[in-house]
Length: 490
Image 1 (tube, rainbow, N blue to C red):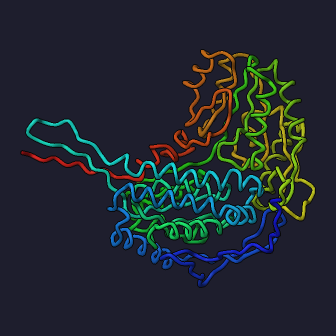
Image 2: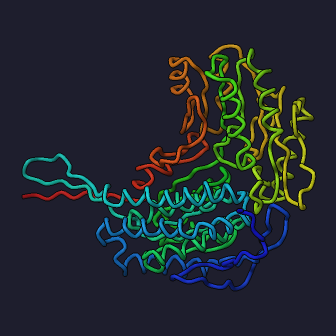
Image 3: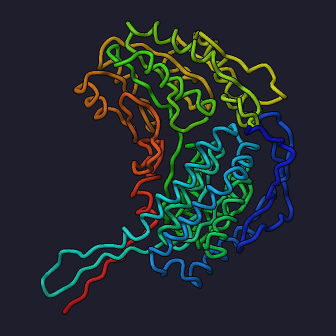
């Protein structure tokens, strides 16, 4: 039985600096559970002075300890121990994650905690794989390209998958020999503190993995502007990504990795191998985490002769969701992260309905479940490209449906003027699939499936305003290394 009492969960309510939890001073904000809107902890907001303390402490540790210079296989061994501890403390991490986030406990344990451990194992394997290379030079010279860590990497993670996103950011940075100062979302702050505690227990030197709590406007801004931060990695909204780029430039040019917003199409042709399987994939891509996923397949673009059948199948699948508090084992449909976010979703839907869209199912806030912020799974038809439901990232369980007659029209509808994070293509025609893969302006294209696999080797990142750089894969580790060219004459 996975059910748990939310009042019985211990909360590490503080920052994590120099290997210990640090109580907050000054301003604090209340943190609420999305399942019932209950206030369950106060969060300290790190000022610029405290951010300076955390970053300076991390920079000193990166210089003073042997984390960057020790044998890479030993760094890998520590990270594998870290992953083992995550597995061993899975129930504690899972409950802390489920309590204050949108992740039901069954999914938090089976997916989030498990993938966090595997993420650190994956990145551990790259610790000794990317050391540099010998360059082709004149025969009386030796040319080398040496890989080195940046020093301190600032990581800013979103609220939708707190633990997983922490592994995406901290894993490659630590494997490359950097120190990390991580700011989790103020909406889901506490599981990351326990994660950092486990890192120290595994053998990561104290101060190499620090956590600062607070808002983006105060804490995040100070972190991005700090002159000792060598690189920034962020996942979140496109607007915030632009603000991070501007803030980071204030203390000198520094590289950024940004995974930003998405409005991903699911392009379904009438010859899709299985209409039932495709419908289930489309439904899962927008119902998972109640649509609060960067790569959510929020735009169904379906060949006209299959449209009615596909909409009917999807409506039936949408009716099967089981909403409930995240601490219940039988909950399969997540709450929205906050009441303001649920209101924002509702505003976009209502605006689109007023402009002529039709709600086949859903279209409103769900009847109160313990005062939680839930939104009905929604299918909108009769939409046009200028409607906000089609144009804007909703980050909720809202699927728009547009129909096309031929391949060219379908590809044109799939193209979004701003976003290019991911896309799905469903067809039995290999040539058509490959033409679509080439034409779609997206960082990831799935064919006859939708969603990431659990092997971590494929990088993820966006085109257009959906981001810069890559998380996951070899590319994520490379992004946490800078390169020094050496030419030796003999």
